[in-house]
Image 1 (cartoon, rainbow, N blue to C red):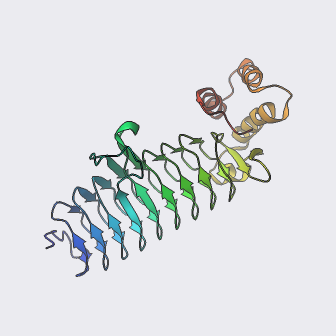
Image 2: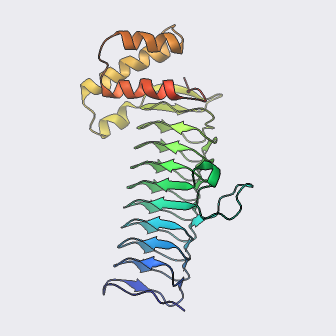
Image 3: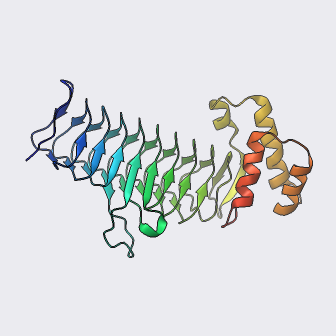
Length: 268
């Protein structure tokens, strides 16, 4: 029996929806036909579950999120070590999660948390595995697959049908072309795609212009990419050269830190 309190006249819960009494549904939510909301789920204000959406907990979902039919949110991780521990999923605000998306909770060994930021577009058939962190304004295109423990930084775009290996980091403002198999960290600001093998094809200049990056910022990043990708220096030598040139600016400094912190190596 549904015992959820409808907190405003704009809220609506379809008669066929099944909502656990321990769930919290915020004001203004629209819960469509045949949706299932389990215990320990908290939905923020003005969320919409169109139909046939399943949300299990513990999961905390922010406000103004829209879930399309047959998405499965907050279900247990697909990890053989998982033994039913109460791990979590957290989702921010203003996200669009399309048909047949699966987002799993975390595992104890991975920190117990999967987290999705705000203002993301997660397109149909995307899978976000356990312990992934997806930043704000990220776009995951159709059937992109994130293995466990993947980090996708803000404004990154992952193309359709891209499998991303466990523990990979995808840098901010990067663009990954459709069908690319990603087995190493992807540099911030870069674009990469698979022809015969994965490699970086220079700066994601169009994307940076759309984000409002000034010409000076883009030129500094472009110079860093020329040193990293087009010089005859190896990665260590290229990093030393860029550091020796004085203040590179905040963007290039972030790029250099990203490379230095990489455990799997970066795509060049």
